[in-house]
Image (tube, rainbow, N blue to C red; front, side, top):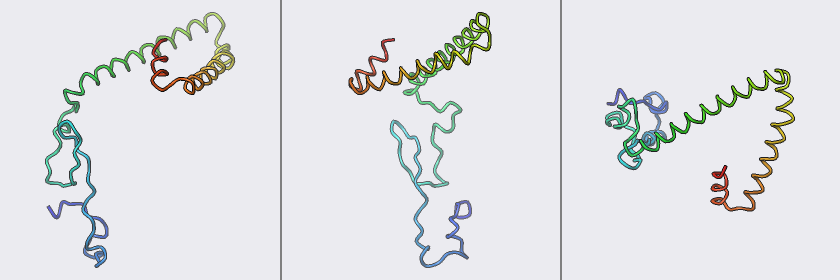
Length: 138
């Protein structure tokens, strides 16, 4: 065990002095254990955490949350890609490719600025919970 342990530079025999002889133990690290995270001392002889053995380190209690977040991410990517491709094909076929930067400057920038101002106003007027439910409406 002594030969495998990583040593701090001040722990080598040539650099060890009376002031560094009582060097603190290795820093504790967090290891997932059971339903809560447990803090254990870093030790090479400690068995690895159960979740680190698996290629899919998600517990059964986390599986519904993981599945819903994965489905939501898939839908976001799908909708974003579909809308972007439809926008490009409709704009290029009707107005030409040179109109895209002009529309971004004259359409997207003012709309985004108005949205930021409106959201800031709603945040200052409404409470945090009411604003959350208001954003769910559209």
